[in-house]
Image 1 (spheres, helix red, strand yellow):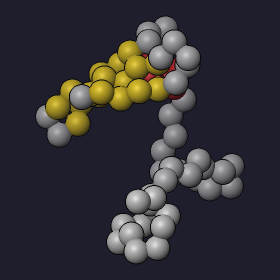
Image 2 (cartoon, rainbow, N blue to C red):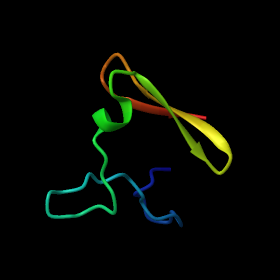
Image 3 (cartoon, rainbow, N blue to C red):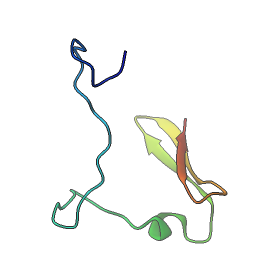
Length: 63
């Protein structure tokens, strides 16, 4: 069943990019996080997550 079909009890929570007039709580340039690296670690609730830049220039987050 598609998320947008009637009868789905869960709201559609697709990501919508921020617009210039919609301030985020905090925006960090990826260059500030990565520098010259292609991977950084992020600690969250005692677990380490790895944020990587792919060969295609996309971001991927793994636990």
